[in-house]
Structures are given as C-alpha cells and as structure tokens.
Image 1 (cartoon, rainbow over the protein chains, first blue to last red):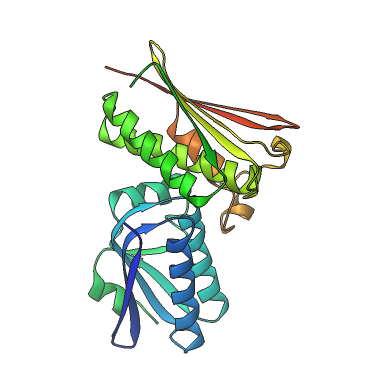
Image 2: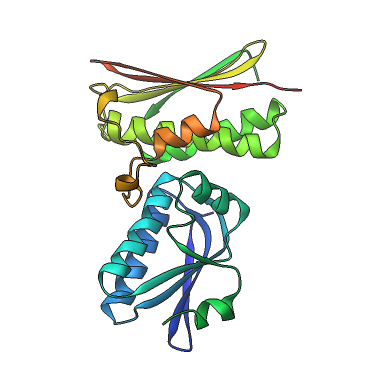
Length: 114
Length: 137
C-alpha cells in the first residue's frame, strides 16, 4: 500500500492525515512535497497525523526529520500525532522520540501551538 | 523454504520492495514471531536500499544478489552488490547529537538493531552484507 495524504484545517493548524507507508520513493516524496507546499502557502503550524502509517523505513524517518527541520527553519512548528507502535519504537531506537513533539490527542496538539 | 533460495535482481526500487516481500514471506514461513518478521523484513529492506542506491547507484548493468539460507539455528540472509565497496570508516553514528537531525545514515544502524549478527564485507567489486537472525523456540 502506497502512502496517502490529506490535509485539513483546525483552528489555524494544518493537520496532515497520513496513511500507508513512508518509504524510499513515492511515500517520502509525497510527504516532502506536501510539507513544502504547505510552508510555501504560509501554513506554518503543522501536525502530521501518523495514526494510519503502518510502515516506515530509514528514508521515511529521514523525511520526518526533514519536515521537522524545514518547518522550524522557516519559523514554523511541526508536531507528530498518534504514532503507531512501530513508528513509536523506531523513533525511540533512533533517539528521535524526544526530538519531535509527539502528541496522542488531536485537540491537545492543536492547542499546544504557540 | 528450501535450504537456500537466491535471487539476482536489478538495481531498482522494485528490487527493494521485492526483497522486503521475500523476507517477510520466508521469515513468516520459518515461524518467527510477528515483531521479528517485521525486524527481519526491515533489515533486509535497508540492506537492499544500500545495495541499490549506494552500492550499484541504480546502474542498469549491475545486479543485487539476495540469498536466504536456513541453517540449523539461524536464518542467514546475504545481500551483495556490484559497486565499489563501502568505506566502513565513513559511516557516522546516527545517535551522536550532531547527527540526530541528519536525514540519512540510519540504515546500517537499523540493521544492527534488528538482527542478531550483521557482517559487512566491502571489496573493490562490491559489498556483501550478511544478516543473521537466530531461530528461537
């Protein structure tokens, strides 16, 4: 299953609902293009909802890092929401769990933006 | 599975997906637990990515050789490319603070995290990666 993304707005925050696989190739490129497009349009409060992401490889991890740093470098903020166990474990192993701002509750995640 | 199964594959992204699928199928057939199957398939995927991208650099005339072998105690997976051979001295530690926010360089680390043994043998005619998972239970 390839990756699917859809975006919605909640109180000035853009939530990107991701499903499928974030892996080398199409999945990574789709995520990269979506985040860059959002930033270009001035949407700098971004939540990546990964609740339906069932697989991620090292390229996908790199893409999450890239989305995080690109957003930050442009004065924005990016949070991760609803990590599956697989993604959670991978971020723990790679010591990225504490680098990202990870949330379990969508409403709380939206409110957490400055 | 038979004792040994091997594939000669093109240097494409399809090969990466194929390698992962075969790893998942074989590890499942051998009775590994679900989380171990995921670990094995991900390690094989990372090895195949390295072979296709960094080893063979997508060269159409270069192949990736993937082999699965069931020994008495282990599942042994070998991934060989036909590139110039990786320089092991240049592999950074992805957990070092200065590398945490790098967007690449985690493949070998993940392989080592998920498998019991990872051996990497570079040579001028290619790199061979051997991944071993002990069959438990």
